[in-house]
Amino acid sequence: MVDFKIVEEWLDKAERDFQFAIRALDRGERFYELICFHFQQAGEKYLKAYIVANELEFKKIHDLGELVQICQRKNSDFKFLEKEAKFLTDFYLEPRYPEEIQQISYPKSIANKAQKAAGKIQKFVKAIL
View (tube, rainbow, N blue to C red):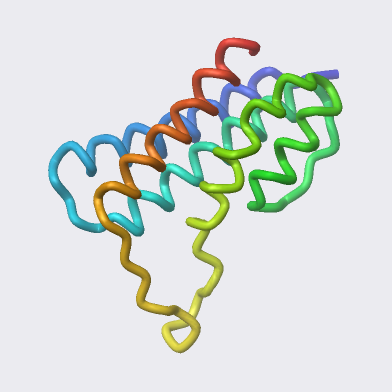
């Protein structure tokens, strides 16, 4: 049985990441790699909200392409988001220690593209939930 409180929590967390990234971008913050990371996180959490809402296989992963494939098991229209999912996945920051972290820098144009990709996932998922 679906626990809609958990679905709402996923949506709330996704929305917080999405809005944080938009506000940072709008304020002219130049931490584009972090802004892109939050757009990736938003996309991931929107997809996980759909997965939980539809009782699909839940995996603790950060690959949006794989999450989209899981969503397609219930709704083949998720194929529409494959390009955005692949693009956003690259912004997930895996390294946890300074010696592992590469200096990653993105221009504002990439952050704007990440916003559009995350926004497309947001709109699609919210429309069908």
